[in-house]
Image (tube, rainbow, N blue to C red; front, side):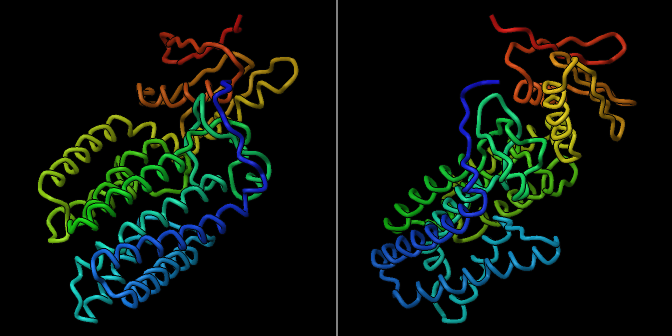
Length: 350
């Protein structure tokens, strides 16, 4: 395993999210008030918009939790509800909807960026195994992280999204201050970023329809509505957003097998198998078989096979990355036998 990792302190498992959420609220309100001053929007209206947006966000989170049976914050759902609530209030008060959304949208970006740092600290929206990334410990397992991923480097996808959201919010704030469509700039780029970051997500409780995750379908639908709306970004920016999503849809089609392996828990089970094999005395061969996929692991030799349809390149690459992340140090080597069994061996570093 690589040293290019960072271990998230265990004390952050339950404390990080509330702290970052509160910080995000303060930052969002401060930025919205600054933009209100720059654009002439009444402060009282900005405060009212902030209140109804927060209420809508929390209401959606509570409703999702009731359906799922546990606390579950879905970023795009909450964001959509918040913007819908803001638009409704602006209509009720006979205020221009685009101008009001332009002022509050950058603040929403900062709020969600802070929330993603909370996700990073809690380990809830974690990435897939990789040779570099963040590691979580037993206190994160107690908070909900799959036990098989304890100590395994995971892509810090929440941190990447936090940086992207903060940058998008900053640009949108400049656009709003200059009299442009800050809402369209912010939401359009957020949807594209979220679509592409779905390829790095490793949590399994995200619905998948066809070859795309729910978040990717939401990003496609949201972008389609946004680019055709008056509050959307300029036409050249809209064209770039659409092209990026179309390219992403093509990538998703090629990576569909890896997405299914993650959703069905195969990547997680392989990580656990690799770690158990490395820790067990006597170099035993451990086997896991589920839904036609057979995984076996010894200390430095791993094999994968599937009944019926053989494993494709995307699936093999995803499984190989798990071995590289969770297995012992060394260079992985791959070999496919005539019988369709795929082998990965890890040599000893010298």
